[in-house]
Image (cartoon, rainbow, N blue to C red; front, side):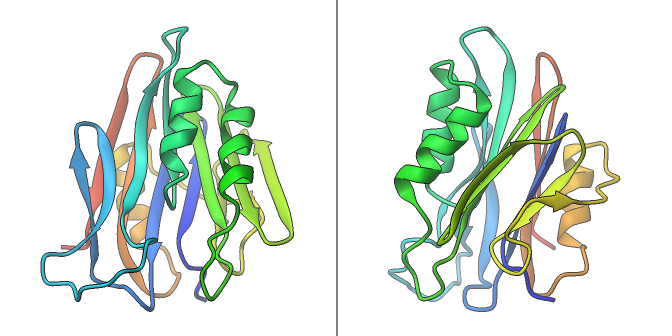
Length: 196
């Protein structure tokens, strides 16, 4: 089954996978605690605005809480900024998702995202027919295709590296690269798996 890009979040852990039929020449790179999806050095030139973006960002709230934002596009940055201003996770997800809406491409691709805290997790998506944001107590997946409503997901990893590798190896078609994140009360750890 091809479900496109997907996010998995649960309390203390999250992951993101790029799956792609059209643009497989991509990787995740680490830049100052932020994970960014970029074309590989030999990738063909493209003017597609949805190819490169931050997919994981560390956040510290005004109360000193460590959080991580995980997502599939340019909405990751405004979600992180809302959290840094003290917005609750639900509002920090809902506001940018509603403002940016689904991607205006040939497939009306949904935007998907999650916020991971040490003891909490919230997942969200905006698609053509709905805006869905919910707090979750166990690992939960939402994808751009087929599985575009949040559903329970069996993520067994307990490290950022393990989470990235586990979702990259998941039995969905066209894996490209993945990111993982763990969050404790005072720290965020990130990892990438580019399938190398």
